[in-house]
Image (cartoon, rainbow, N blue to C red):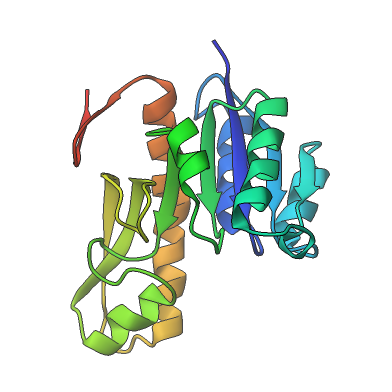
Length: 202
């Protein structure tokens, strides 16, 4: 059975592109990206979606009375597209309870640090400035907290002597583009089992 995917974005959408490419070459399996939703009108990710014939939807937060109403609109869009799996790819808002409740353990996010360290914004710079010797990225299921959901996969990226925060971020991004499609593939193949905080690969 085909898994219908929605991707929530706020920016350029490089991780979105990695998912699109992985679907197109058949790596991810029987999947269809039905819709890309952005809270930013000129997000380049929307152009990426249109270029590949994917529905691209801008939902303006400022046109809604509060977060609850805004997310009701997002949820309605997901339902209209028969979405089974929601992917966050540079989406810069914390999801509210109503979406998480509806899609519990069916929402994934990619974070550019080895969680639970360096949550939130600018994680690569946080790690670099802290002086870590190993950085990396994490795919996790989304819960009500900020980058606190059960961890699916992680990939390490060594910090080298002449790194800057930007060069480290660039090398982490390369691994993000590999690990996110891998996690989605495992989900679609039914190989992920969630028990509390533990995600097992079957």
